Every structure is written in structure tokens, then in C-alpha cells.
Image: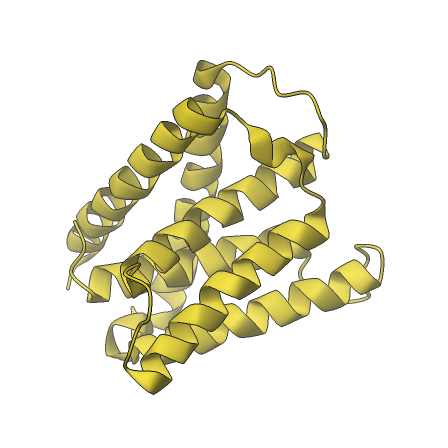
Length: 181
């Protein structure tokens, strides 16, 4: 695959995720603004844990697919990054335009990070199993939990935002491999 294909595939996945994010924002407003960082981390954990359970058990008792869970990981990672910038707030009056602008900016930052890493790793994700991407997301969640336990500080490691960006990119890779578009 070429970088051009990766760009097109990435953009197509983000279009799907953003569409869902904006529709939910229309329906619910930014109710997520009240979430603490730890609650966002737990939401990411719930989504990734469900994917791993479905991968292992091969049977779902509710109709939501792994695809929906990966999309939720993308969108909760964005929510997490927004909350890191803005802080939690009960203020639910935010224009849809502002939310969309911030979503796009954070996606562009995360996409640029992905291309920098993708260059250095030679698109290794294309040869990985989807279950490995799930495990990497879970590992990143555990890292974020540990950083949160240290009040957001690290001695040598990446911070919370970098981990959110990696989770988002791993979820996009999984969605590409699942042929979502």
C-alpha cells in the first residue's frame, strides 16, 4: 500500500467517525463535557474490553459490533483530548461549529503523528492482527490509568494526549483492516 492509499483510507474512516460524533452531538449536546478524565479512560476501557471479549468468545449477546466499538474509541479519544485542553465543565453551551473545528484540528494533529510513525515503522500495522491492535489500545489505556494515578505527570514517558492519539490511530487501523468505509 502507498501513503496515498493510507491517506484515503484514514480519511474515509474519520469521515464515518466524525459523522457519528456530530450526530450524537446534535442529539445529546456536549453532555460529555461533565466527564472527568478517569471516566473517559474507563469508557475507552469498556469499549476495548468488549472488543477483546468478542474476539475471544466469538459470540455477541447485544447487536453492537466491534466496528461500533472501534468508532467509539476514536470518538472517546477525541473527547479525551478536548477535555485535556478545556477541562471538565458542566457548561454544555458550545456551538456545533466550534466542536467540529476542534474535532478536525485534533484529528489533523493525530493523523500527522500517524504519518510520522508510519514512515518510521513502514506501515507495520498492515501486517498486524486486529487482535494485536486491540491489545495495544488496552495497553495504552492501562498506561493512561497509571499516569492519572500520578496526577498526570510522568518522569520519562509520553503523556496522556500521546496515548489518546495512539489509541485513536490503532482504532482507525483496525477499522481499515475491517474494511469500514
